[in-house]
Image 1 (cartoon, one colour):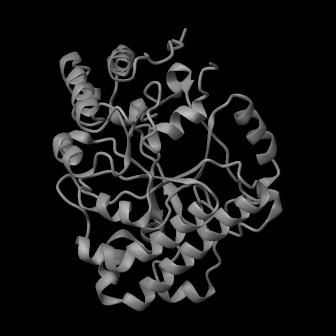
Image 2 (cartoon, rainbow, N blue to C red):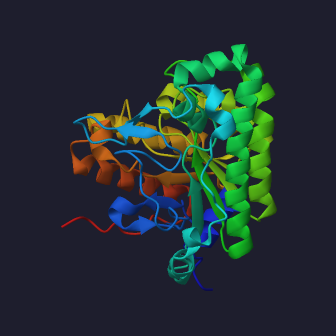
Length: 341
């Protein structure tokens, strides 16, 4: 029998159909069962100011290597919303390079992912400001609804344009929306369900209608929000602070209902380089989040300097720990890593 492709292994894990090994997305070691393709900025687009993105948000970075943060909010005055123009995802120049990228990923047998950066809540507060967005959910509800609906319509258009141009060729959509502090979500679960749930569902429904799985990343202690994601149709939740969440608690509540993408905790464990703690995280995650049917994808954070990982050997040790546990649970280890020279 031919070995399964990366695409098949990932899909089996997501849908609890007994993958032959743990799926892995560790490009740092040359091992990734997924491949990313996506729309680009339209031809001729240039930022109006340094650090500005397509939505008009201005980003700044510190001396520490990281993604930066938005310090210029184009809709700080929400009254400007009526004249605001979001990115146009019907522009054909955005998709000029996607066909070739798709062919390259498909030729490798990988699971094809496209993505949306800042899918809803994050885009709201980068446009309007974090504190003002939270306050506006109570004090300026109609304006916040209009802002959220504009973002939803923009991203639904993107999903449908990709589906129309490349039908059946995108396996999953990944996106980011951080929702938690170290101790709790930013808002109550009731408000989240009232305001955000129906809007997320519109986006996720468009993805499912295109035959795609839905992947969402969220930082912080988002224990309740995961329930909302499940009800809205999320297939994979990317959680990179498992110790903050509580590994056993999350497993007891959600294992078998949603697939997890994770690794040794990027705050409390991996930066320490402590082999005992790394092994303990791997053991706990495989015991409480993974199952023989699937439900777990081993991933990389991808920005070692930003989280304070100073020793490359710590990540190799983590890889080997998850590989051993893949062998024990599924009968096959992870592919041999390609180490940096």
